[in-house]
Image 1 (cartoon, rainbow, N blue to C red):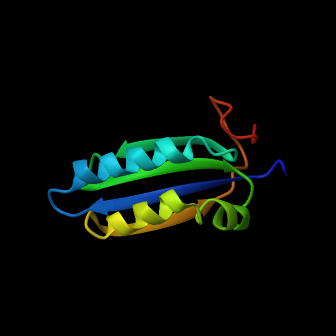
Image 2: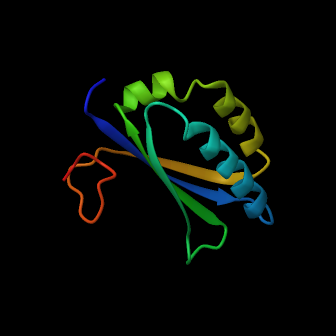
Length: 110
């Protein structure tokens, strides 16, 4: 495996009254994906300025293409994607490549 890493910064806007139900689904997904060989870390945060928003910041071994080929196709992700229709209004994904890090050693960019 390559020494490359890819990060996903994903912003979700929950449907009114659905944030906690969505959070439960998201945490369940993270429990599944955290056992994957390429998984490094995930951080979930609430947006203090937008109460219906949750953000997840994931770090994975590999590249965007390897993540899409190997991780996005997992059966548990397909089930999760189906449930999202009832829980969120919006999702935006940013693909990132770490190039420098301070204060931790989550990535290999230090």
